[in-house]
Image 1 (cartoon, rainbow, N blue to C red):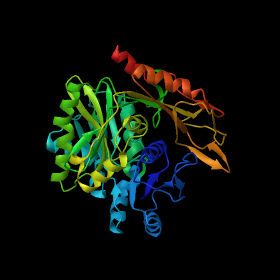
Image 2 (cartoon, rainbow, N blue to C red):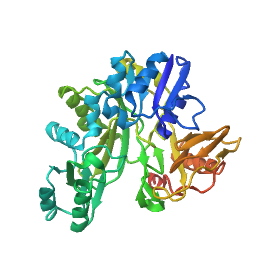
Image 3 (cartoon, rainbow, N blue to C red):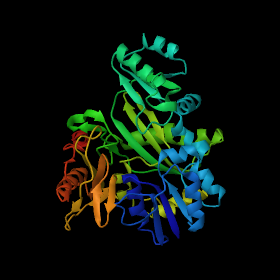
Length: 420
């Protein structure tokens, strides 16, 4: 079969590597992909060009499409491809709203009693400013729509809260995504990411993960797209997992079904384990990045078979098995990321590397792969336990070379502390 994967980052490269293991797939296309994806044929069409992607898929007789990023999902790419007879992995537009609108997702949780932070929704700037005069601090201010993984400001003071509201609603720093905002209670506790396969009726959680969003060691510095991940997350115990399944995961897919928005694909749960139990911080309508880079390497079953079963509504009959092991991914970024940085430097990898190099920001110039972004690549390692996985990932980063490479030195340290 011919399969196309939409997207260009580390998440998509990980998906492609895993799909490559399936005996059912003959050829993989990456649209647009990046210069490090040697396993796929690159097709230089932007992910938002839905009509062009549909035309390409028809003309090249693509059998199945995996739509990985949020933008095309929220814009209805799955609906468009289905409309020309091509099945997909990913939710349709009606279901992708669970990430596309924070107002929708918060109201859904309230309506169906799914645990989340207390909140208010505002489309009037004066009312929002009035509320934060007396709101408990810190407070969390979120733009309603997609904002490239950003759109969330934690305000420690009244002034910060007022500035955040003005910058989102008046200055439109996140564009139309800031027409409505959510102001919510600040929760505390360990964060856990859980990705789950679902066909709309059955839901199978994947191995839990822990992301490291801040640019600098000790969780300091600016927020990024993620500087590394580990799996499994030690805070996600069997007891916590059972509560999440009963009170969050199953109620969410049932709620979506009742709303006429049956969700098929990968549903991402961003959770906070508070002293009052697990609560939802956010939903994503797709695989997380960089969580995918540690979760999929632990998958033993055929990813393509699982994806097909999600599309066909037969997930209850499909084996989904994970290794009893651990994984760590250390992101190697361009020095200065997420602000100013230089790229365009050759990337070389030693031939004796014993980890997987997952490219995120890379381009090809004849036979040379060059750095082409803030998060350049991830080095992902699997080992019998978490300590060994972390040590291996760091050891193998020494075999990857490009000018101005930067990485955090403490990915997984918090998780090891929790284990001890």
